[in-house]
Image (cartoon, rainbow, N blue to C red; front, top):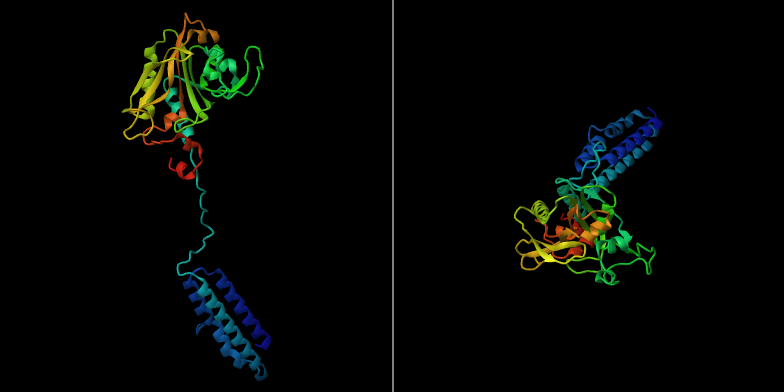
Length: 341
């Protein structure tokens, strides 16, 4: 072996050691590398002992190069030891990657799916009608007089300042899903067992109202339909959605599109801050007014029916296990709140 070969072997040892140290992730690995390249049985130690095999004039340079290599390897090992944590994880590139966290449906969407499923069990079908509708469908066809307070600018969001159609009038952001009643009647589909779930808009905001909210409209029209059928459907829904221990009551009221009309209340759990005396009004209901049937092209002497319209969010916030005291928080997009559900 000559001097050139000796120096090349030193460079190869140094490069190999560097490669091992780069891949090491734990202190135990670094210690093993130190023994491999600096121990008594290491290749470097054997190379130092083989200097005597060189010509006398080459031994000085070879010894100097060997000592420099040993010093450099010691320095690299110590740097790696200081930089490596005691319990550093070993990177296994064959392991599958971490899964991205998944979100979940918003409370309102959850409620819409629950409500739809409940009514599908008793033969109702789901429809969807425009959120931007005509005054005629939202008010006139539902027996609202021209001077009714609901047609005031401070109650309803009107899109047009003036009438756009001689019959249909102005366009509005629909204030209730009841605007879909006559549209459904005009399809000619009988009997009608409709659930219409959509966004609705009113100029109201407090702990139990928001300017935009979701409402679901139930409409059943057939021969021989009575208040008894309405009460049975209300009882069924409340037991299914709120729980078997909750109760429903109806109170006489006045709606333009039903006669007789009722407000519907559901009993509240103890400690609820919403409602009065343990009850919360969740919507309106009643028997479809004969004039509304006529507006939809249905003979009120042959058919009768009932309708109800309730707020989706208003129902959801008092469902068992929810108990939200301010409906507005549903639309504040606070991730700390949303993650709870």
